[in-house]
Length: 92
Image (cartoon, rainbow, N blue to C red; front, side):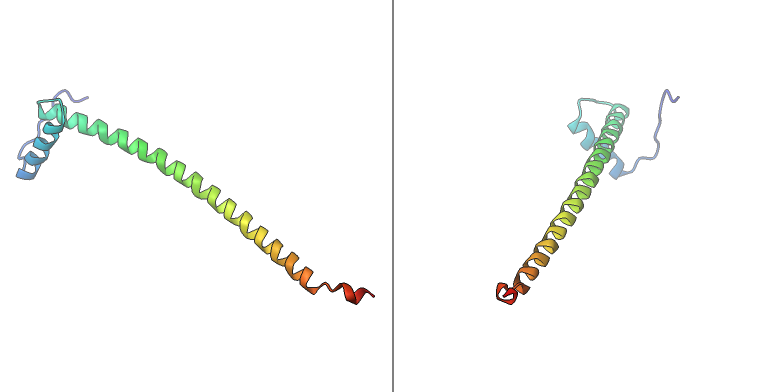
């Protein structure tokens, strides 16, 4: 388990990112800001996983409903075709 983390040779972009994170954070040290960003990333990744699972379930339900509608439409068309072919005058 790491007790201290040292990052050397930060670029200007790295420092800009840290400054922006500090501006949005209640922490004043880079290490605390990075930890907060890491925890936020993990929380967001978990949430995204849940959303993906929910979306997959919704897509599956949509496909099931679409299949049922298409079957119903085919049955209705078959019934309509049968009614059009039926001529009561032919039975006499």
